[in-house]
Length: 392
Image 1 (cartoon, rainbow, N blue to C red):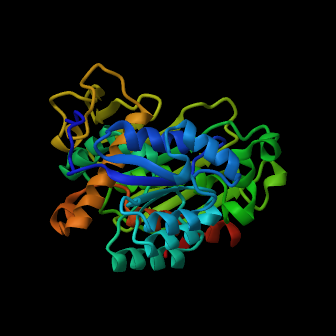
Image 2 (cartoon, one colour):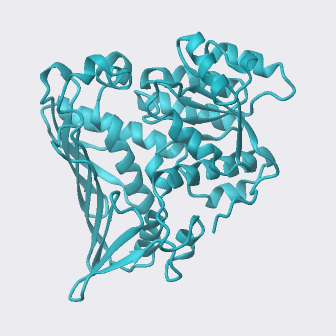
Protein backbone atom coordinates (compact mmCIF):
# COMPACT_ATOMS: atom_id res chain seq x y z
CA UNK A 1 0.00 0.00 0.00
CA UNK A 2 1.21 3.51 -0.80
CA UNK A 3 1.25 5.73 2.30
CA UNK A 4 3.48 8.61 1.18
CA UNK A 5 6.79 7.39 2.60
CA UNK A 6 9.69 7.97 0.27
CA UNK A 7 10.47 5.30 -2.29
CA UNK A 8 13.55 7.05 -3.65
CA UNK A 9 16.37 8.85 -1.82
CA UNK A 10 15.06 12.37 -2.55
CA UNK A 11 12.47 14.07 -4.78
CA UNK A 12 13.60 14.66 -8.34
CA UNK A 13 13.92 18.28 -9.43
CA UNK A 14 11.18 18.66 -12.02
CA UNK A 15 10.06 21.17 -14.64
CA UNK A 16 7.13 21.53 -17.01
CA UNK A 17 6.95 22.71 -20.60
CA UNK A 18 3.36 23.81 -21.14
CA UNK A 19 0.66 23.09 -18.61
CA UNK A 20 -0.02 26.75 -17.81
CA UNK A 21 -3.13 28.73 -16.99
CA UNK A 22 -5.10 27.82 -20.13
CA UNK A 23 -3.99 24.18 -20.22
CA UNK A 24 -6.55 21.39 -19.98
CA UNK A 25 -4.08 18.89 -18.52
CA UNK A 26 -1.46 20.88 -16.60
CA UNK A 27 -3.19 20.60 -13.23
CA UNK A 28 -3.59 16.84 -13.65
CA UNK A 29 0.17 16.52 -14.16
CA UNK A 30 0.96 18.59 -11.08
CA UNK A 31 -1.62 16.76 -8.99
CA UNK A 32 -0.08 13.46 -9.99
CA UNK A 33 3.55 14.46 -9.62
CA UNK A 34 3.18 16.27 -6.30
CA UNK A 35 0.66 14.01 -4.57
CA UNK A 36 3.64 12.13 -3.12
CA UNK A 37 5.94 15.00 -2.18
CA UNK A 38 8.74 12.46 -1.93
CA UNK A 39 8.72 11.84 -5.73
CA UNK A 40 9.03 15.20 -7.53
CA UNK A 41 9.62 18.85 -6.67
CA UNK A 42 8.46 21.48 -9.18
CA UNK A 43 11.29 24.02 -9.47
CA UNK A 44 11.10 25.45 -13.01
CA UNK A 45 8.99 25.72 -16.12
CA UNK A 46 8.18 27.26 -19.48
CA UNK A 47 4.47 27.20 -18.82
CA UNK A 48 3.03 29.28 -21.66
CA UNK A 49 3.80 30.62 -25.13
CA UNK A 50 2.89 34.02 -23.63
CA UNK A 51 5.93 34.55 -21.39
CA UNK A 52 4.39 37.18 -19.13
CA UNK A 53 1.31 35.05 -18.53
CA UNK A 54 3.44 31.95 -18.02
CA UNK A 55 5.73 33.65 -15.51
CA UNK A 56 2.79 35.09 -13.59
CA UNK A 57 1.23 31.63 -13.49
CA UNK A 58 4.49 29.97 -12.39
CA UNK A 59 4.97 32.42 -9.53
CA UNK A 60 1.37 31.84 -8.45
CA UNK A 61 2.00 28.10 -8.10
CA UNK A 62 5.23 28.62 -6.16
CA UNK A 63 8.01 28.60 -8.80
CA UNK A 64 10.68 31.29 -8.46
CA UNK A 65 10.27 34.03 -11.07
CA UNK A 66 13.85 33.61 -12.35
CA UNK A 67 13.14 29.94 -13.07
CA UNK A 68 10.07 30.68 -15.21
CA UNK A 69 11.35 30.70 -18.79
CA UNK A 70 9.96 31.96 -22.11
CA UNK A 71 10.51 28.67 -23.96
CA UNK A 72 11.87 25.16 -23.60
CA UNK A 73 15.24 26.00 -25.17
CA UNK A 74 16.05 28.63 -22.57
CA UNK A 75 14.69 26.36 -19.83
CA UNK A 76 17.05 23.53 -20.75
CA UNK A 77 20.05 25.80 -21.36
CA UNK A 78 19.74 27.86 -18.17
CA UNK A 79 18.89 24.95 -15.89
CA UNK A 80 21.96 23.06 -17.18
CA UNK A 81 24.13 25.85 -15.75
CA UNK A 82 22.75 25.44 -12.24
CA UNK A 83 24.13 23.00 -9.66
CA UNK A 84 20.50 22.44 -8.64
CA UNK A 85 19.15 22.30 -12.20
CA UNK A 86 16.19 20.18 -13.20
CA UNK A 87 16.56 16.43 -13.64
CA UNK A 88 13.22 15.65 -15.29
CA UNK A 89 10.70 17.49 -17.43
CA UNK A 90 7.07 16.99 -18.36
CA UNK A 91 5.98 17.98 -21.87
CA UNK A 92 2.34 19.06 -21.78
CA UNK A 93 2.14 20.84 -25.11
CA UNK A 94 0.17 20.22 -28.35
CA UNK A 95 1.02 17.01 -30.22
CA UNK A 96 2.98 18.64 -33.02
CA UNK A 97 5.64 19.92 -30.63
CA UNK A 98 6.32 16.69 -28.73
CA UNK A 99 9.04 15.32 -30.99
CA UNK A 100 11.35 18.36 -31.05
CA UNK A 101 10.96 19.11 -27.33
CA UNK A 102 11.46 15.48 -26.29
CA UNK A 103 14.57 15.19 -28.43
CA UNK A 104 15.99 18.41 -26.97
CA UNK A 105 15.24 17.28 -23.42
CA UNK A 106 16.97 13.92 -23.87
CA UNK A 107 19.97 15.62 -25.46
CA UNK A 108 20.05 17.89 -22.40
CA UNK A 109 20.36 14.80 -20.22
CA UNK A 110 16.86 14.97 -18.77
CA UNK A 111 14.36 12.25 -18.01
CA UNK A 112 11.12 12.96 -19.89
CA UNK A 113 7.40 12.54 -19.23
CA UNK A 114 5.34 13.34 -22.31
CA UNK A 115 1.68 13.70 -23.16
CA UNK A 116 0.13 11.27 -25.56
CA UNK A 117 0.17 10.61 -28.43
CA UNK A 118 3.92 10.87 -28.40
CA UNK A 119 4.58 11.73 -32.05
CA UNK A 120 3.08 11.62 -35.53
CA UNK A 121 5.23 8.84 -36.99
CA UNK A 122 6.39 5.40 -35.84
CA UNK A 123 9.87 6.25 -37.16
CA UNK A 124 10.03 9.27 -34.85
CA UNK A 125 9.05 7.15 -31.85
CA UNK A 126 11.65 4.51 -32.71
CA UNK A 127 14.31 7.21 -33.10
CA UNK A 128 13.46 8.74 -29.72
CA UNK A 129 13.40 5.33 -28.04
CA UNK A 130 16.93 4.70 -29.31
CA UNK A 131 18.04 8.15 -28.14
CA UNK A 132 16.60 7.59 -24.64
CA UNK A 133 18.46 4.29 -24.41
CA UNK A 134 21.67 5.94 -25.64
CA UNK A 135 21.36 8.72 -23.04
CA UNK A 136 20.31 6.34 -20.27
CA UNK A 137 17.12 8.30 -19.61
CA UNK A 138 13.55 7.26 -18.87
CA UNK A 139 10.74 8.39 -21.16
CA UNK A 140 7.29 7.99 -19.61
CA UNK A 141 3.93 8.65 -21.27
CA UNK A 142 0.96 10.03 -19.36
CA UNK A 143 -1.75 7.53 -20.07
CA UNK A 144 -3.44 9.02 -17.05
CA UNK A 145 -6.17 6.43 -16.52
CA UNK A 146 -3.72 3.53 -16.48
CA UNK A 147 -2.76 3.98 -12.82
CA UNK A 148 -6.12 2.57 -11.71
CA UNK A 149 -5.30 -0.43 -9.54
CA UNK A 150 -8.24 -2.53 -10.77
CA UNK A 151 -6.65 -2.64 -14.22
CA UNK A 152 -3.70 -4.40 -12.61
CA UNK A 153 -6.18 -6.78 -10.98
CA UNK A 154 -7.51 -7.58 -14.46
CA UNK A 155 -3.94 -8.18 -15.65
CA UNK A 156 -3.30 -10.59 -12.78
CA UNK A 157 -6.55 -12.50 -13.26
CA UNK A 158 -6.01 -12.93 -17.00
CA UNK A 159 -2.43 -14.11 -16.39
CA UNK A 160 -3.66 -16.60 -13.77
CA UNK A 161 -6.16 -18.10 -16.21
CA UNK A 162 -9.20 -16.94 -14.25
CA UNK A 163 -11.20 -16.25 -17.41
CA UNK A 164 -9.69 -18.96 -19.61
CA UNK A 165 -8.31 -18.13 -23.05
CA UNK A 166 -9.09 -14.59 -24.19
CA UNK A 167 -11.45 -14.56 -27.17
CA UNK A 168 -12.98 -11.05 -27.35
CA UNK A 169 -11.66 -7.60 -26.45
CA UNK A 170 -14.27 -4.81 -26.40
CA UNK A 171 -12.97 -1.25 -25.92
CA UNK A 172 -14.80 2.06 -25.82
CA UNK A 173 -13.86 5.67 -25.08
CA UNK A 174 -16.59 8.12 -26.05
CA UNK A 175 -18.07 11.42 -24.92
CA UNK A 176 -20.33 14.10 -26.36
CA UNK A 177 -18.27 17.23 -25.90
CA UNK A 178 -17.49 17.47 -29.60
CA UNK A 179 -21.13 17.70 -30.69
CA UNK A 180 -20.99 21.49 -30.60
CA UNK A 181 -18.27 22.72 -32.98
CA UNK A 182 -18.14 26.17 -31.36
CA UNK A 183 -15.21 25.13 -29.21
CA UNK A 184 -13.18 24.31 -32.31
CA UNK A 185 -12.77 28.07 -32.78
CA UNK A 186 -13.13 29.51 -29.26
CA UNK A 187 -11.59 27.01 -26.82
CA UNK A 188 -7.79 27.23 -26.50
CA UNK A 189 -7.52 23.58 -25.50
CA UNK A 190 -9.80 22.44 -28.31
CA UNK A 191 -8.64 24.51 -31.29
CA UNK A 192 -5.32 22.76 -31.80
CA UNK A 193 -6.88 19.30 -31.42
CA UNK A 194 -8.80 19.75 -34.68
CA UNK A 195 -5.92 21.32 -36.60
CA UNK A 196 -4.03 18.60 -38.56
CA UNK A 197 -0.86 20.69 -38.58
CA UNK A 198 -0.74 20.56 -34.77
CA UNK A 199 -2.78 17.50 -33.79
CA UNK A 200 -1.41 15.17 -36.45
CA UNK A 201 -3.31 12.71 -38.64
CA UNK A 202 -6.17 12.03 -36.21
CA UNK A 203 -8.42 13.65 -33.62
CA UNK A 204 -10.23 11.15 -31.39
CA UNK A 205 -8.05 8.18 -32.38
CA UNK A 206 -5.00 10.00 -31.01
CA UNK A 207 -6.64 12.00 -28.26
CA UNK A 208 -8.89 9.31 -26.79
CA UNK A 209 -8.38 5.80 -28.13
CA UNK A 210 -4.67 5.65 -27.32
CA UNK A 211 -5.59 5.74 -23.61
CA UNK A 212 -7.88 2.73 -23.85
CA UNK A 213 -5.65 0.88 -26.29
CA UNK A 214 -2.70 1.25 -23.89
CA UNK A 215 -4.82 -0.06 -21.02
CA UNK A 216 -5.79 -3.10 -23.10
CA UNK A 217 -2.08 -3.79 -23.62
CA UNK A 218 -1.49 -3.32 -19.89
CA UNK A 219 -4.12 -5.96 -19.16
CA UNK A 220 -3.08 -8.24 -22.04
CA UNK A 221 0.70 -7.79 -22.38
CA UNK A 222 1.20 -10.98 -24.39
CA UNK A 223 -1.46 -10.35 -27.05
CA UNK A 224 -0.53 -8.73 -30.36
CA UNK A 225 -2.71 -7.39 -33.15
CA UNK A 226 -2.30 -9.17 -36.49
CA UNK A 227 -4.54 -6.92 -38.58
CA UNK A 228 -7.18 -4.23 -38.17
CA UNK A 229 -9.85 -2.32 -40.02
CA UNK A 230 -10.67 1.30 -39.15
CA UNK A 231 -13.77 3.18 -40.31
CA UNK A 232 -13.73 6.85 -39.28
CA UNK A 233 -16.10 9.77 -39.77
CA UNK A 234 -16.13 13.56 -39.45
CA UNK A 235 -19.72 14.18 -38.38
CA UNK A 236 -18.78 17.81 -37.84
CA UNK A 237 -17.71 18.39 -41.42
CA UNK A 238 -15.30 21.24 -40.71
CA UNK A 239 -13.04 18.78 -38.87
CA UNK A 240 -12.27 16.72 -41.96
CA UNK A 241 -9.88 15.10 -42.64
CA UNK A 242 -9.69 14.55 -38.86
CA UNK A 243 -12.30 12.21 -37.42
CA UNK A 244 -14.60 12.82 -34.48
CA UNK A 245 -15.89 9.22 -34.51
CA UNK A 246 -14.29 5.90 -35.42
CA UNK A 247 -14.88 2.16 -35.20
CA UNK A 248 -11.93 -0.22 -35.28
CA UNK A 249 -12.04 -4.00 -35.69
CA UNK A 250 -9.03 -6.07 -34.69
CA UNK A 251 -7.77 -9.61 -35.24
CA UNK A 252 -5.17 -10.78 -32.73
CA UNK A 253 -2.40 -13.26 -33.40
CA UNK A 254 -3.87 -15.75 -30.89
CA UNK A 255 -7.21 -15.86 -32.76
CA UNK A 256 -9.05 -13.39 -30.52
CA UNK A 257 -11.06 -10.54 -32.00
CA UNK A 258 -11.50 -6.99 -30.77
CA UNK A 259 -13.39 -3.76 -31.33
CA UNK A 260 -12.82 -0.12 -30.38
CA UNK A 261 -15.44 2.62 -30.55
CA UNK A 262 -14.04 6.08 -30.03
CA UNK A 263 -16.05 9.28 -30.35
CA UNK A 264 -16.38 12.92 -29.35
CA UNK A 265 -19.94 13.08 -30.68
CA UNK A 266 -21.66 10.48 -28.48
CA UNK A 267 -24.32 13.01 -27.49
CA UNK A 268 -25.08 13.12 -23.78
CA UNK A 269 -22.34 10.65 -22.81
CA UNK A 270 -20.24 11.68 -19.81
CA UNK A 271 -18.50 8.45 -18.80
CA UNK A 272 -17.90 6.42 -21.93
CA UNK A 273 -14.69 4.53 -21.25
CA UNK A 274 -15.22 0.80 -20.81
CA UNK A 275 -13.02 -2.26 -21.17
CA UNK A 276 -14.50 -5.76 -21.41
CA UNK A 277 -12.26 -8.82 -21.74
CA UNK A 278 -14.08 -12.04 -22.62
CA UNK A 279 -12.54 -15.47 -22.11
CA UNK A 280 -13.63 -19.05 -22.62
CA UNK A 281 -14.63 -19.36 -18.95
CA UNK A 282 -15.52 -15.87 -17.76
CA UNK A 283 -15.42 -12.15 -18.50
CA UNK A 284 -14.02 -9.05 -16.82
CA UNK A 285 -15.39 -5.53 -17.23
CA UNK A 286 -14.13 -2.15 -15.97
CA UNK A 287 -15.87 1.19 -16.42
CA UNK A 288 -14.20 4.49 -15.59
CA UNK A 289 -17.45 5.80 -14.06
CA UNK A 290 -16.91 3.21 -11.31
CA UNK A 291 -13.11 2.88 -11.27
CA UNK A 292 -12.98 1.15 -7.88
CA UNK A 293 -15.09 -1.78 -9.14
CA UNK A 294 -14.30 -4.72 -11.40
CA UNK A 295 -17.10 -6.93 -12.65
CA UNK A 296 -16.21 -10.64 -12.83
CA UNK A 297 -18.76 -12.84 -14.61
CA UNK A 298 -18.20 -16.61 -14.64
CA UNK A 299 -20.32 -18.57 -17.09
CA UNK A 300 -23.14 -20.33 -15.27
CA UNK A 301 -22.65 -18.42 -12.01
CA UNK A 302 -23.99 -15.16 -10.59
CA UNK A 303 -21.89 -12.14 -11.53
CA UNK A 304 -19.73 -10.63 -8.79
CA UNK A 305 -18.11 -7.25 -8.22
CA UNK A 306 -14.56 -7.02 -6.89
CA UNK A 307 -13.79 -3.85 -4.95
CA UNK A 308 -10.57 -1.85 -4.84
CA UNK A 309 -8.54 -2.01 -1.63
CA UNK A 310 -9.84 -5.38 -0.43
CA UNK A 311 -7.74 -8.25 0.89
CA UNK A 312 -8.86 -10.73 -1.77
CA UNK A 313 -7.20 -8.82 -4.62
CA UNK A 314 -3.89 -9.78 -6.16
CA UNK A 315 -0.75 -8.23 -4.67
CA UNK A 316 -0.03 -6.21 -7.82
CA UNK A 317 -3.33 -4.34 -7.31
CA UNK A 318 -2.87 -3.92 -3.56
CA UNK A 319 0.62 -2.45 -4.04
CA UNK A 320 -0.93 0.60 -5.76
CA UNK A 321 -3.63 1.08 -3.12
CA UNK A 322 -3.66 4.49 -1.39
CA UNK A 323 -6.81 5.04 0.63
CA UNK A 324 -8.14 1.64 1.71
CA UNK A 325 -11.39 -0.12 0.93
CA UNK A 326 -14.63 1.93 1.06
CA UNK A 327 -12.74 5.21 0.56
CA UNK A 328 -13.39 6.42 -2.98
CA UNK A 329 -10.42 7.34 -5.15
CA UNK A 330 -10.34 8.46 -8.75
CA UNK A 331 -8.33 9.99 -11.57
CA UNK A 332 -6.05 12.03 -9.28
CA UNK A 333 -4.85 8.86 -7.59
CA UNK A 334 -4.34 7.22 -10.98
CA UNK A 335 -2.10 10.08 -12.11
CA UNK A 336 -0.26 9.97 -8.79
CA UNK A 337 0.38 6.24 -9.21
CA UNK A 338 1.96 6.61 -12.63
CA UNK A 339 3.99 9.66 -11.60
CA UNK A 340 5.35 7.79 -8.57
CA UNK A 341 6.39 4.97 -10.89
CA UNK A 342 7.99 7.49 -13.25
CA UNK A 343 10.09 8.72 -10.31
CA UNK A 344 11.00 5.18 -9.25
CA UNK A 345 12.00 4.35 -12.84
CA UNK A 346 14.12 7.49 -13.18
CA UNK A 347 15.87 6.84 -9.86
CA UNK A 348 16.51 3.21 -10.84
CA UNK A 349 17.93 4.30 -14.21
CA UNK A 350 20.20 6.80 -12.45
CA UNK A 351 21.48 4.01 -10.21
CA UNK A 352 21.78 1.45 -13.00
CA UNK A 353 19.19 -0.85 -11.40
CA UNK A 354 17.99 -2.63 -14.53
CA UNK A 355 16.56 -5.51 -12.48
CA UNK A 356 14.00 -3.20 -10.87
CA UNK A 357 13.16 -1.62 -14.22
CA UNK A 358 12.57 -5.02 -15.80
CA UNK A 359 9.60 -5.74 -13.53
CA UNK A 360 8.19 -2.22 -13.09
CA UNK A 361 4.79 -1.80 -14.77
CA UNK A 362 4.25 1.77 -15.99
CA UNK A 363 3.53 3.59 -19.29
CA UNK A 364 7.01 3.74 -20.79
CA UNK A 365 8.38 4.68 -24.19
CA UNK A 366 7.30 1.24 -25.42
CA UNK A 367 3.68 2.04 -24.60
CA UNK A 368 4.03 5.43 -26.27
CA UNK A 369 5.59 3.92 -29.38
CA UNK A 370 2.79 1.36 -29.58
CA UNK A 371 0.25 4.18 -29.34
CA UNK A 372 1.83 5.90 -32.34
CA UNK A 373 1.82 2.57 -34.20
CA UNK A 374 -1.87 2.09 -33.36
CA UNK A 375 -2.81 5.50 -34.78
CA UNK A 376 -0.72 4.96 -37.92
CA UNK A 377 -2.38 1.62 -38.68
CA UNK A 378 -5.87 2.99 -38.03
CA UNK A 379 -5.25 5.98 -40.32
CA UNK A 380 -3.77 3.73 -43.01
CA UNK A 381 -6.83 1.48 -42.96
CA UNK A 382 -9.27 4.41 -43.02
CA UNK A 383 -7.48 6.23 -45.83
CA UNK A 384 -7.48 3.10 -47.99
CA UNK A 385 -11.25 2.92 -47.74
CA UNK A 386 -11.70 1.20 -44.39
CA UNK A 387 -10.02 -2.06 -45.36
CA UNK A 388 -8.18 -4.70 -43.37
CA UNK A 389 -4.47 -3.90 -43.14
CA UNK A 390 -1.62 -5.89 -41.71
CA UNK A 391 -0.64 -4.41 -38.36
CA UNK A 392 2.87 -3.03 -38.79
